Length: 390
Ligand SMILES: *[C@@H]1O[C@H](CO)[C@@H](O)[C@H](O)[C@H]1NC(C)=O
Ligand SMILES: *[C@@H]1O[C@H](CO)[C@@H](O)[C@H](O)[C@H]1NC(C)=O
Ligand SMILES: *[C@@H]1O[C@H](CO)[C@@H](O)[C@H](O)[C@H]1NC(C)=O
Ligand SMILES: [Ca+2]
Ligand SMILES: [Ca+2]
Image (tube, rainbow, N blue to C red; front, top):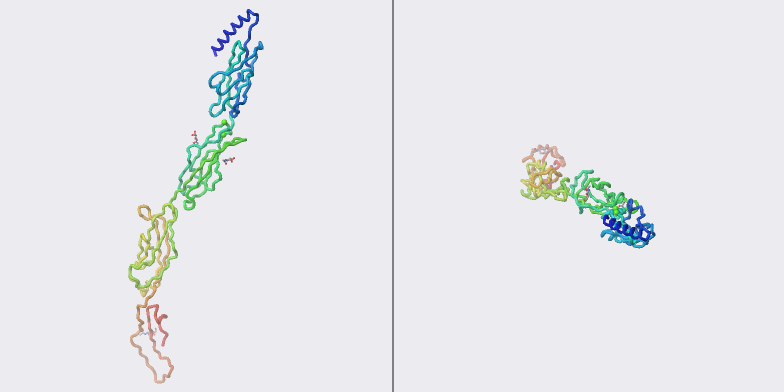
């Protein structure tokens, strides 16, 4: 500028000298726009090719004036119509890239050039949608995560100014199980989760700026993966357990195989089977691993301990990884009826019977003789036990 001023001064003095000779002194033009004292505001959405302002200058000598712009960057963005001083925009502005310029304009009266700098402020419009950071969004949480627990934070920013740069979050559509804090993007559990019901949630987060007239929004996916925890007791399947077994079945006979399953489907555990009660004389054996209930001795129905059958209480226990029993158990009853086979001959309750008969006895007179025939087997001609008295 010093150089220009110096040049202008030399020219001016020369002109003064020359005009002094001719009795006329040239006066240099000067800009009259007020923005030279403050700043010029141009909105960032001004279309390329439109006029942004008009340079105004006065010349006391009414010389024809020529306007211009100097500087490499300024010349890329602005063009000045030499005769009128109208300033055109040559390429798009973006406040988020460059929010101000210092541009030097010039005016010349063909005898001298005056330059002045103007501060150009680029005005903001809401031209950016929020941007999510650190995508993709994915989180794994155990199914027993308590209601109210924060599990994730999404983060979107918006470079626009004011409301157009202020971001609010929401789920779209809303979720029954998760809520998002609209201002901070914190995702929390709002309802009890259950791996056995739902193993994963795909949520859509909407980040929207708060521009009054034309809000802009961006969507992002949030995957929430529910992991299983051992929280369900096992159950016996194929209930009820009720079986008949013939007495004198050989030891080792399989009565039935019982089966329990872990209801935690994610990583089901193995089951160990045991008899809790009802196993008189350990007459049955239950295989810990296979659940096969077998006969462990001779089953004699005539043994009064066995004749009413058995009511076993059996237990299934989920096994930990190291095969030790866990706390997750289930019990059920197993009814076993012993079926009779005819292995006993009828017996009189005495080897001889005697009776005194009077000579007055008549035909049809019932002898006072009491004979009982007993058959211990249930299935026999004397199925009802003792005979009627003769
Ligand atoms: C969001 O991301 C931006 C840009 O990476 C960062 O400056 C800001 O601190 C983040 N905000 C939160 C709450 O993490
Ligand atoms: C995001 O939410 C805002 C405010 O509710 C809504 O105007 C906008 O349409 C939503 N964005 C999308 C992409 O659906
Ligand atoms: C045989 O059984 C009958 C009927 O119960 C009984 O009256 C009788 O005394 C029994 N006899 C003997 C020898 O036990
Ligand atoms: Ca914006
Ligand atoms: Ca903007």
